Image 1 (tube, one colour):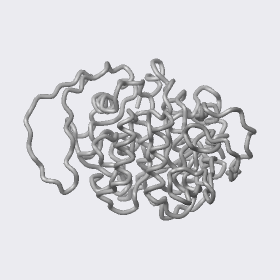
Image 2: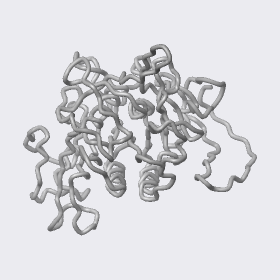
Image 3: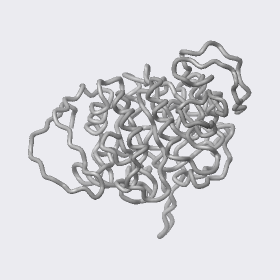
Amino acid sequence: MRAPEAWDLSQGEGITVAVVDTGIDAEHPDLAANVWVNSGRGPEPRRRRGSRPISTASTTISNGFIDDLHGFDFANSVDADGDGDYDDPGDVSDPDPFDDFGHGTHVAGTIAAIANNGIGVAGVAPRARLMAVKGFKASGSTPDSILARAMVYAADNGARVINNSWSCSTRCPRNLVLELAQAYAASLGVVVVTSAGNRNDDVMFYSPKWRYDNVVVGATDDRDRPAIFTNYGLLVSVVAPGSGDFFQPGILFPQRAILSTRSSGAGSTPTAEARSRSAANTCAGSARRCRRRTSRGSPRSCSPCTPIASPAEVRAVIRGTARDLGEPGFDIATGAGLADAARAVQSPRPTVRAQFTAPMPGAAVVSRRGIASRSAPP
């Protein structure tokens, strides 16, 4: 991705990336300095790692949440009366989005692990802020409404990018709840980045990944080929590193080859809600972990982008600066090509004169003729 070349111009300064996932270990030594802090909160006592206290104090500020210092745990909170907040009698407010599974911390490290500190790894955007928005428990299923609330929270609290490295476990062509949540985020100027998924299937069957206003990211292996598990299709924007492969005669083994940060709470067994994620083996130290999946690719695509006026312009830069792979031009296996951080941060602001939206699955296709142009480099 040529991230080191991009760092001479941008390292993600001023950008808050919300990780809607299993949470983040906010005390990880390679992440702690980059974890987002709610500016509306005063100093609070440092919590025991992973304590996830149940709060009864009346410390709600203007966003309507209690003690959300680094984000919020929607997965373990209860909105008893369904009014959209967690501060009424019978509600359970869990403000500590600690990662008791490991996936979210791994994604967070890929995005913004601190660079040049002699510890662990460096993220693609090592000076970006990480907002922890926990939508998944360590086990069990997660309702769509929880993930939708998580995305709305991130958009309302200043995230410029929302990273969704998750998927439904079977084909789900439409999901109006999640689609509306993503549309709301986009209306506030938030760039929504989603992993393409790991089913070796067309992404059009996995809502809300296929939404035209997403940046949809597939995975490549260590030879810049589409990973054997990645979803594909005309709705894939770009691809990014997500796997390594090991060959024996006649046999291909996808390897967990993306090194990143490991939560101190990792170790749970993947269950229904986590089927798009893989259990991972520890590698090269207890604070680091190797994984494979398109979840590793999606944090790489947009994290280094400098502020641009609209999500449409960000998408245009990412696609317009990608390095072409496979057949010349856009293709269903790799989209516009391999995300290139160096070219992206050097790209002039694009001119988006026309925007074409893909038809929804099953919709009739009406042909249109027109002229479109862009200023991003080829």
